[in-house]
Image (cartoon, rainbow, N blue to C red; front, side):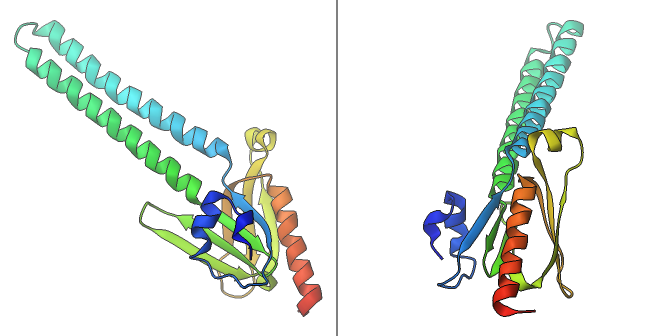
Length: 190
């Protein structure tokens, strides 16, 4: 397989996934940017609320006990700032983890890399011949309007289904997966 057709993240993960020499990349599925927007907006909101709460407490305490509380006010503002920065750092990490999830579809297999945290990832590979069904779900007006959804690849046997959320153009990718499966059936039979 030619790694030159992969994105930067796909190239990075290329070495941890087993590919054959004659394997052809059909598509690379990455997460839709709308999920990043949700993560970043939530993180900024939490940071602003945390900082505002501590500023409000310091202001209220300064109003009640004007001369005795100056050091306490500074400490509260500092704690609020530190917590807000930690929330922003956690938001950045969550965005990185979200962006690192990927699904690669070739003419022989589906490989999925899902990160649960910075240090925990799950790499799954499924022979394209073991695909039973590919289902796309789009819930709500935003997923339809922005064209993202959840792709569920149902497998044969006892393997767990592959679920990939926030997939952009999910019907397009599902069609490519089914096409690759049908091509594999024609080539190798049942």
